[in-house]
Length: 619
Picture 1 (cartoon, rainbow, N blue to C red):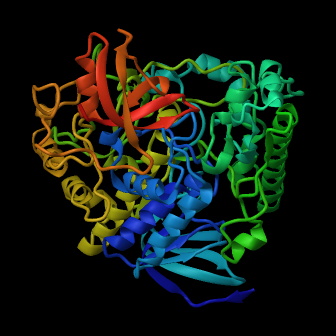
Picture 2: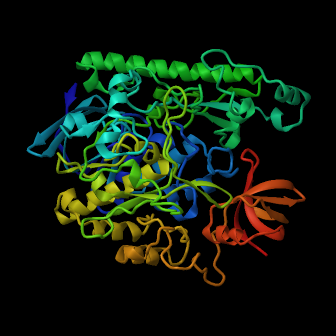
Picture 3: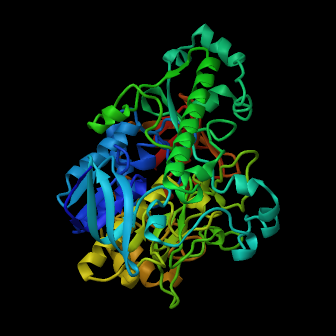
């Protein structure tokens, strides 16, 4: 192997996760010379390379800000069939669509350089700082000299090499009083907790649906009446929803389906410690164990896809989506493969950071509240740099893990209570120039179930990248960066302004969005427990203002019928459609309905939901 010259980088991002690409983009856009390293050939982590293309969380327009919102709107225009494709999410897209957008963004940044297919070999410390990172790239060993280092990987891969303190696995309820955590006695006595130290990952597999199901063909109807069962170990996978709903759970444009099924499906539960070399012992042993684990995960997902294909009677076929490693290495964004390019890791190492996000930081602050407690500093000012709202979801073998409820009825559907992530949760305690940008920031095992999702991780990465650039510009370490400076820069970002405060009534596209975010920072005491900045129930819209148009939306007329329990049905010439909205103004209007009402609404239909997602009232 050849040895290259030392190379300096103001911001060095070890990536592979969605937070890594977000951090690198934002650091470069904010003026720092940035080097992004990924172990694989694609950029996007969960949102592309891992094939998790039906994102959960941050679906409502108040939470569609930052790089997550920018990606979502770019996807709306690159996917001609629209994003209303499945019933697990309001959004579905093809993996290569997200990857194309991200690569276009990267190519536009003069200060950003991306090296793919990199092997991470060593990290050097000078006291409490990372002084050098050694990698192998294209057969050359290179020693990189960073100012600020960001871990943007799914599993916190830099932490053990850098000697950064991190957490791994379960924490007992007695430690932090998290309501859903197991007791210390259970952790010590039940072998489950040793066998299952982290949430189960999935190696996503994609399938291709045939058109015959929508054509009313006799064979389709016969199959629907009596679909065949699945073989072991997947025989119970369709018990909860049936085969058709199981297949369309993660439907994507073009009839692709994302097979990421937790109910006796392709989640993987065995030998997960093999993905963490420091828990196996020895480099050679760790590499062998890790290779065996990945092969087992791939085989399991392929077997699940084959079982579904067999049971579908020809409706589901193999997808030709992902390039082979050889094709991907030369820049191909398509190929003949159906397996994602990397696993979907839900959890890994979690940084010991200056602040720790716990389960109670995600839950409503009392009965009737609509937001979680806001992250604050000792003097009462807000320390938040990101907003999430996913409910909480843990993946293990067996039944669902019981979790404290944090959902509320909104816009005709259920949504999660919004919560905030403090800047200190990104800042390492033990390494002064290290930041976290993906799901392995300072969070507990229980809280990780709500903080690990694509939208929030993109915005956490954005905050980490911007913080790194500001540290370079100001000549300070991350711990010394004033939080208010970072918050104002996020809100004022010229490309992808990001919310730091959860305001239910202010969508990303409202003319006063930036102003109200700054007002909330200035006077957090004005934010009530319902997530409103004023006493009024909804923010008044300026005359003539409306949400921006979306591809595929059209006018729908009929009689709108409230069910009295927070749900709505539109009955018209197109039949009866359950109705939902992601827009605060329309949600507030719906709350005032107490009887059937004739309406005209603009929206997009999702037959796989099924629901009609509406954005504005015409009359």
